[in-house]
Image: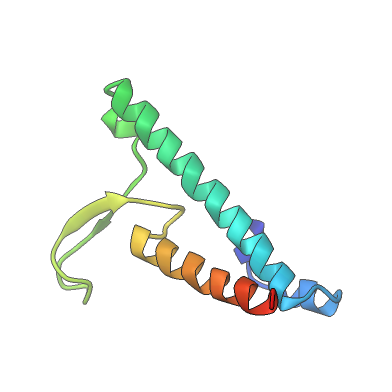
Length: 97
């Protein structure tokens, strides 16, 4: 997701793109990535190809709780995705008044 690469948001701001429009771009790109990942997970499960499911391992002792493996959304976990989408929606809705 190019919009999340270092320097991209600053470049867009310098080009005159509003914070609301940047939030819309981020929201759209994040939604696309999440839905593509979920499609991949669904296809892997239906085909019994579990090794194709994108996962990340979180070891115990990393201040994030116990050991677990989770579906990776481009190195984000679902909590981070929900938090980001929620914040982006606030920005977009706040500007729509």
